[in-house]
Length: 237
Ligand code: URA
Image 1 (cartoon, rainbow, N blue to C red):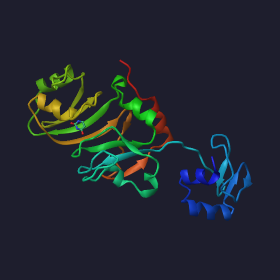
Image 2: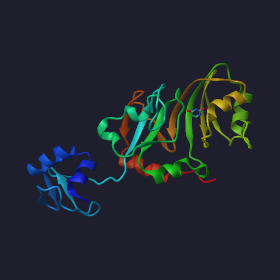
Image 3: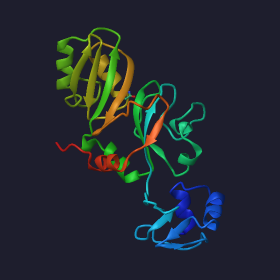
Image 4: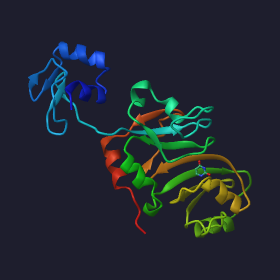
Protein backbone atom coordinates (compact mmCIF):
# COMPACT_ATOMS: atom_id res chain seq x y z
CA UNK A 1 0.00 0.00 0.00
CA UNK A 2 1.19 3.57 -0.65
CA UNK A 3 2.33 5.43 2.44
CA UNK A 4 -0.03 8.38 1.84
CA UNK A 5 -3.01 6.03 1.48
CA UNK A 6 -2.04 4.28 4.72
CA UNK A 7 -1.81 7.60 6.57
CA UNK A 8 -5.20 8.73 5.27
CA UNK A 9 -6.84 5.42 6.17
CA UNK A 10 -5.42 5.60 9.68
CA UNK A 11 -7.02 9.06 10.00
CA UNK A 12 -3.75 10.97 10.26
CA UNK A 13 -5.24 13.52 7.88
CA UNK A 14 -6.81 14.17 4.52
CA UNK A 15 -4.73 13.60 1.36
CA UNK A 16 -3.57 17.22 1.25
CA UNK A 17 -2.87 17.35 5.01
CA UNK A 18 -0.86 14.13 4.78
CA UNK A 19 1.22 15.60 1.96
CA UNK A 20 2.13 18.58 4.16
CA UNK A 21 2.86 16.41 7.22
CA UNK A 22 5.19 14.28 5.10
CA UNK A 23 6.99 17.37 3.77
CA UNK A 24 7.39 18.55 7.38
CA UNK A 25 9.29 15.32 8.15
CA UNK A 26 6.77 14.10 10.71
CA UNK A 27 6.52 10.56 9.34
CA UNK A 28 9.07 7.77 9.54
CA UNK A 29 9.19 4.35 7.92
CA UNK A 30 11.23 1.69 9.75
CA UNK A 31 13.15 4.40 11.57
CA UNK A 32 13.88 6.69 8.61
CA UNK A 33 12.08 9.93 7.90
CA UNK A 34 10.09 9.78 4.64
CA UNK A 35 8.83 12.86 2.84
CA UNK A 36 7.21 11.25 -0.18
CA UNK A 37 3.76 9.65 -0.07
CA UNK A 38 4.28 7.26 -2.96
CA UNK A 39 6.57 4.94 -1.00
CA UNK A 40 5.21 1.37 -1.05
CA UNK A 41 4.94 0.00 2.46
CA UNK A 42 3.95 -3.31 4.02
CA UNK A 43 1.24 -2.13 6.40
CA UNK A 44 1.31 -5.43 8.31
CA UNK A 45 5.06 -5.62 8.92
CA UNK A 46 6.58 -2.15 8.65
CA UNK A 47 6.80 0.36 11.49
CA UNK A 48 5.30 3.69 10.50
CA UNK A 49 5.57 6.48 13.06
CA UNK A 50 3.84 9.82 13.12
CA UNK A 51 5.68 12.35 15.27
CA UNK A 52 7.58 9.44 16.82
CA UNK A 53 4.53 7.37 17.77
CA UNK A 54 3.94 4.07 15.92
CA UNK A 55 0.66 3.85 14.01
CA UNK A 56 -1.16 0.57 14.59
CA UNK A 57 -2.62 -0.67 11.31
CA UNK A 58 -6.34 -1.38 11.55
CA UNK A 59 -7.97 -2.80 8.45
CA UNK A 60 -11.54 -2.31 9.60
CA UNK A 61 -13.46 0.26 11.58
CA UNK A 62 -15.79 -0.62 14.47
CA UNK A 63 -18.06 1.88 16.17
CA UNK A 64 -20.53 1.53 19.01
CA UNK A 65 -23.42 3.95 18.56
CA UNK A 66 -26.20 4.82 20.95
CA UNK A 67 -28.82 4.99 18.23
CA UNK A 68 -31.43 7.66 18.88
CA UNK A 69 -35.10 7.19 18.04
CA UNK A 70 -36.14 8.78 14.77
CA UNK A 71 -33.33 7.57 12.51
CA UNK A 72 -33.29 4.42 10.42
CA UNK A 73 -30.60 1.71 10.54
CA UNK A 74 -29.75 1.84 6.86
CA UNK A 75 -26.88 3.16 4.78
CA UNK A 76 -29.13 5.34 2.61
CA UNK A 77 -32.77 6.31 2.60
CA UNK A 78 -34.66 8.63 0.27
CA UNK A 79 -36.76 10.25 2.99
CA UNK A 80 -35.42 9.36 6.41
CA UNK A 81 -32.27 10.33 8.27
CA UNK A 82 -30.00 7.31 8.63
CA UNK A 83 -27.52 6.27 11.31
CA UNK A 84 -24.71 7.01 8.84
CA UNK A 85 -25.85 10.64 8.74
CA UNK A 86 -24.77 10.81 12.40
CA UNK A 87 -21.15 9.94 11.59
CA UNK A 88 -18.47 12.61 11.25
CA UNK A 89 -17.31 12.94 7.61
CA UNK A 90 -13.90 11.43 8.42
CA UNK A 91 -15.54 8.32 9.91
CA UNK A 92 -18.03 7.89 7.10
CA UNK A 93 -15.67 7.22 4.25
CA UNK A 94 -14.89 3.52 4.37
CA UNK A 95 -18.02 1.54 3.44
CA UNK A 96 -19.35 1.56 6.97
CA UNK A 97 -22.73 -0.07 7.48
CA UNK A 98 -24.94 -0.88 10.47
CA UNK A 99 -24.49 -4.47 11.65
CA UNK A 100 -28.11 -5.54 11.95
CA UNK A 101 -31.14 -3.36 12.36
CA UNK A 102 -33.02 -1.54 15.06
CA UNK A 103 -36.47 -0.12 14.33
CA UNK A 104 -36.76 3.61 13.72
CA UNK A 105 -38.26 4.12 17.18
CA UNK A 106 -35.73 1.85 18.97
CA UNK A 107 -32.75 3.32 20.79
CA UNK A 108 -29.48 1.86 21.94
CA UNK A 109 -26.52 -0.25 20.95
CA UNK A 110 -25.88 -0.36 17.24
CA UNK A 111 -22.60 -1.65 15.89
CA UNK A 112 -21.28 0.05 12.76
CA UNK A 113 -18.44 -1.49 10.81
CA UNK A 114 -17.01 -2.26 7.39
CA UNK A 115 -16.00 -5.78 8.44
CA UNK A 116 -18.42 -7.87 6.38
CA UNK A 117 -17.15 -11.21 7.66
CA UNK A 118 -17.65 -10.23 11.29
CA UNK A 119 -21.12 -8.85 10.52
CA UNK A 120 -22.05 -12.09 8.81
CA UNK A 121 -20.93 -14.13 11.82
CA UNK A 122 -22.69 -11.91 14.35
CA UNK A 123 -25.95 -11.89 12.42
CA UNK A 124 -26.03 -15.57 11.54
CA UNK A 125 -29.03 -17.21 13.27
CA UNK A 126 -26.80 -20.24 13.94
CA UNK A 127 -24.45 -18.25 16.17
CA UNK A 128 -27.11 -17.40 18.77
CA UNK A 129 -25.60 -14.05 19.71
CA UNK A 130 -27.28 -12.54 22.81
CA UNK A 131 -29.06 -9.21 22.39
CA UNK A 132 -30.45 -7.60 25.54
CA UNK A 133 -33.21 -4.99 25.48
CA UNK A 134 -34.74 -2.73 28.06
CA UNK A 135 -38.44 -3.03 27.34
CA UNK A 136 -41.06 -0.69 28.79
CA UNK A 137 -44.61 -1.91 28.44
CA UNK A 138 -48.07 -0.41 28.12
CA UNK A 139 -49.51 -2.60 30.87
CA UNK A 140 -48.28 -4.72 33.77
CA UNK A 141 -46.45 -7.93 32.96
CA UNK A 142 -47.36 -10.98 35.04
CA UNK A 143 -45.06 -13.75 36.25
CA UNK A 144 -46.97 -16.14 33.95
CA UNK A 145 -46.18 -13.95 30.95
CA UNK A 146 -42.52 -13.86 31.96
CA UNK A 147 -42.49 -17.64 32.14
CA UNK A 148 -44.08 -17.85 28.68
CA UNK A 149 -41.41 -15.54 27.23
CA UNK A 150 -38.73 -17.63 28.88
CA UNK A 151 -40.12 -20.80 27.31
CA UNK A 152 -40.85 -19.40 23.85
CA UNK A 153 -43.94 -17.73 22.35
CA UNK A 154 -45.82 -17.86 19.09
CA UNK A 155 -45.08 -14.78 16.99
CA UNK A 156 -46.60 -16.23 13.84
CA UNK A 157 -43.47 -17.97 12.60
CA UNK A 158 -43.11 -21.68 11.91
CA UNK A 159 -41.61 -22.28 15.36
CA UNK A 160 -41.95 -20.69 18.78
CA UNK A 161 -39.30 -18.13 19.68
CA UNK A 162 -36.19 -19.57 21.30
CA UNK A 163 -36.13 -19.45 25.11
CA UNK A 164 -35.42 -15.91 26.31
CA UNK A 165 -33.98 -14.56 29.56
CA UNK A 166 -36.17 -12.10 31.42
CA UNK A 167 -35.23 -9.89 34.36
CA UNK A 168 -38.06 -7.88 35.83
CA UNK A 169 -37.25 -4.20 36.29
CA UNK A 170 -40.65 -2.99 37.46
CA UNK A 171 -44.32 -3.81 37.05
CA UNK A 172 -44.22 -2.59 33.43
CA UNK A 173 -40.59 -3.05 32.47
CA UNK A 174 -38.21 -5.93 31.86
CA UNK A 175 -34.78 -6.68 30.46
CA UNK A 176 -35.26 -9.25 27.75
CA UNK A 177 -32.33 -11.18 26.29
CA UNK A 178 -32.92 -13.00 23.02
CA UNK A 179 -30.66 -14.80 20.60
CA UNK A 180 -32.72 -14.30 17.47
CA UNK A 181 -33.27 -11.19 15.41
CA UNK A 182 -36.54 -11.61 13.57
CA UNK A 183 -38.32 -8.55 12.19
CA UNK A 184 -39.88 -6.57 15.10
CA UNK A 185 -39.13 -9.57 17.28
CA UNK A 186 -39.38 -7.94 20.70
CA UNK A 187 -42.58 -6.08 19.81
CA UNK A 188 -44.13 -9.26 18.45
CA UNK A 189 -43.08 -11.21 21.56
CA UNK A 190 -44.82 -8.65 23.76
CA UNK A 191 -47.93 -8.81 21.58
CA UNK A 192 -47.86 -12.59 21.99
CA UNK A 193 -48.35 -12.04 25.74
CA UNK A 194 -51.07 -9.43 25.08
CA UNK A 195 -48.92 -6.43 25.88
CA UNK A 196 -47.38 -3.58 23.88
CA UNK A 197 -43.90 -2.02 23.79
CA UNK A 198 -43.89 1.70 24.54
CA UNK A 199 -40.09 2.10 24.75
CA UNK A 200 -37.31 -0.13 23.50
CA UNK A 201 -33.57 0.21 23.97
CA UNK A 202 -30.89 -2.35 23.13
CA UNK A 203 -28.44 -2.39 26.02
CA UNK A 204 -26.03 -5.10 24.89
CA UNK A 205 -24.91 -6.98 21.84
CA UNK A 206 -22.96 -10.21 22.32
CA UNK A 207 -20.66 -9.68 25.29
CA UNK A 208 -20.50 -5.92 24.84
CA UNK A 209 -22.70 -3.53 26.80
CA UNK A 210 -23.70 -0.10 25.60
CA UNK A 211 -21.33 2.54 26.95
CA UNK A 212 -23.74 4.58 29.07
CA UNK A 213 -21.57 7.68 28.60
CA UNK A 214 -22.82 7.81 25.01
CA UNK A 215 -25.88 10.04 24.72
CA UNK A 216 -28.43 9.12 22.04
CA UNK A 217 -26.84 9.97 18.67
CA UNK A 218 -23.27 9.68 19.96
CA UNK A 219 -20.79 6.97 19.04
CA UNK A 220 -17.20 5.94 19.68
CA UNK A 221 -14.67 3.54 18.20
CA UNK A 222 -14.45 0.16 19.89
CA UNK A 223 -11.25 -0.45 21.80
CA UNK A 224 -8.88 -3.17 20.59
CA UNK A 225 -10.04 -5.32 23.51
CA UNK A 226 -13.71 -4.86 22.58
CA UNK A 227 -12.97 -5.86 18.97
CA UNK A 228 -11.32 -9.04 20.25
CA UNK A 229 -14.34 -9.78 22.47
CA UNK A 230 -16.66 -9.26 19.49
CA UNK A 231 -14.61 -11.60 17.34
CA UNK A 232 -14.94 -14.27 20.00
CA UNK A 233 -18.69 -13.70 20.40
CA UNK A 234 -20.96 -16.65 19.70
CA UNK A 235 -23.04 -18.99 21.78
CA UNK A 236 -22.91 -22.56 20.65
CA UNK A 237 -26.04 -24.58 21.30
N1 URA B 1 -37.12 -6.05 18.29
C1 URA B 1 -37.98 -5.10 17.87
O1 URA B 1 -39.18 -5.28 17.89
N2 URA B 1 -37.46 -3.94 17.42
C2 URA B 1 -36.14 -3.68 17.39
O2 URA B 1 -35.72 -2.59 16.98
C3 URA B 1 -35.26 -4.67 17.85
C4 URA B 1 -35.78 -5.86 18.28
